[in-house]
Length: 341
Ligand code: NAD
Ligand code: DAU
Image 1 (cartoon, rainbow, N blue to C red):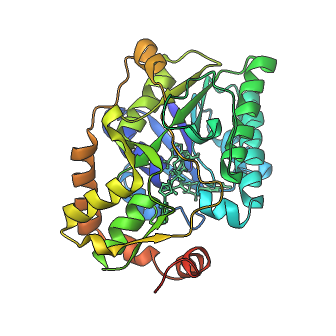
Image 2: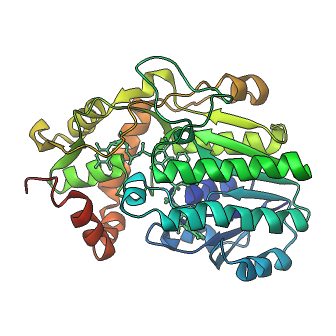
C-alpha cells in the first residue's frame, strides 16, 4: 500500500506518520510538506530513518512540483492534511490560507484523480460549521457557516472535494474533527502555548472572558479515526470526529487545569482582548462514525492532558527552538497590545 501524507511534518500529520508506522508497519509512506513555519522535520526524524517513509519538500499548490511526486509513485491512498491552520494568523492575513487550503487542495485533487488514487481523505475541521450556542451539536448535514478566514478556506476546500465526488465520482472522504491536542503541536495553539508559557512563568493570554468552549480530542484518537475512515468509510461522505462529552470544556477551566498540573499559580492567567468573531462553542455529534466505523475516542481528557503536560515539560528543547525568530514577531503582532507585560 502506497500512501501520500500531505502536511506530515506538522502537528497532526507527524502524529499520523508515527501512528501508521506503529499500526500499519507494511505501508509505504511519502510525506509531502513545504516546511512552513509550522512544519518541522524533527517531528518525524525517527520514522524517516527507517525504510518505510520518504520525504519530499514541496508546495501542494505548485502543480509542477506535485506532478513529479505523483509520477514517482502510484499512490493508493492520500491523507491530505497540509494547510495553513491557525485562526489568529488568518485574521492577520488570509491570502496564504486561500492559496494553500483552497488552491492546494484543488491541485491535489486534479493530480490524484488523474493518477487513479483509490481513496482521498480530506482532513477538515468542525470550524466549517461556524459557532454553536450553549446547546446542541453539529451533525454532518449542518449547513456550513464559517466565521474566520481560516474556517472559510477550509469550507471552500470541503466543497471542492465533495464536488469532485459528485462530478467525477472520484473516491473522496471528508473528516471534520474538533480541537486536537498532544505532542508536536506548534506553540501558537492554545494548549502548547499555555503549557510552554507557564513553564517559562509567562502570562497565559486568555481571550475574552474565557468561557468559550472547545471539544478536546487526543491526536491519536483522531489518527485512529482517519484510518477507520480510509479503510471503512463510504466514498463521498463526511464524518465528524470529536472528543468525549466530558472533554467539552471552557477555556478558563482548561487553563486552570494545566496550571494545577504544572503546580503554577492561577495568577499567570491574564484576560486579554478577545479574538474578533471568536466562535463561542464547538461540539460535534460523532454517532455516524461510531455507527459506521465503530470509532469512538478512547483517551480521556484527564489522562491525555497529564501526558501532554509531561511531554512539553520533558521536551523543552523542541519548543524553545521554535519560540524564537519568526515566532517572536508573530507573538508581538498578535499579543503585543493585548498583554500588560
Ligand atoms: P499544522 O499547522 O501543525 O501543520 C500543517 C502542515 O502543513 C505544516 O507541516 C506545514 O509546513 C504544511 N504546509 C502548509 N502549507 C503547505 C503547502 N502549501 N504545501 C505543503 N505543505 C504545507 O496543522 P495541524 O494542526 O497539524 O492540522 C493539520 C490538518 O488538520 C489541517 O488541514 C487542519 O485544518 C486540520 N485540523 C486541525 C485540527 C487541530 O485541532 N489542530 C482539528 C481539525 C482539523
Ligand atoms: O476545532 C478545530 C480547530 O481547532 C482546527 O481546525 C484549527 O486548526 C485549530 O487551530 C483549532 O482552532 P481554535 O481556534 O479552536 O484553536 P486555538 O488553539 O487557536 O484556540 C483554542 C481556544 O483558545 C479558542 O477559544 C481561542 C482560545 N485562545 C487561543 C489562543 C491562541 C485563547 O484564549 N488565547 C490564546 O492565546
